[in-house]
Length: 99
Image 1 (cartoon, one colour):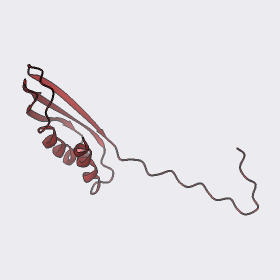
Image 2 (image 1 turned 180 degrees about the horizontal axis):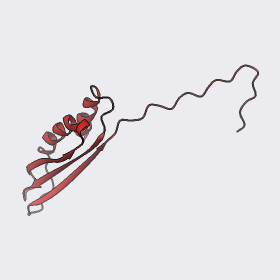
Image 3 (image 1 turned 135 degrees about the vertical axis):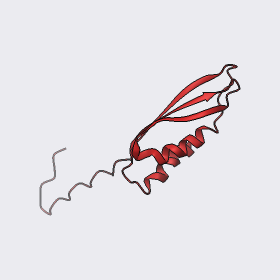
Image 4 (image 1 turned 90 degrees about the vertical axis):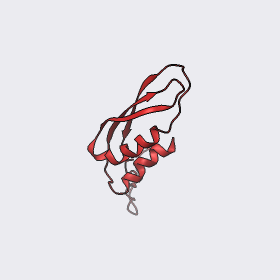
């Protein structure tokens, strides 16, 4: 569900180090529609992303089970690490590193 990821990546534009866990409790009707969606837990730095994710989770439709159900959804959000540093160039005439 790319929209759920977009909630976090959009939030990272203004909060570059936002990271943490958010947990949602969904109540599903027998036909698979989400009847209730609540943020059960969210790290403070990811609350804006969690609010966006809650809105998207409310629109999901699950498989019809003919029974009411409760589902817990957990997201762990962490920004990607910066790319590894480039190796230091060798000085002219220096020996090549061993393989």
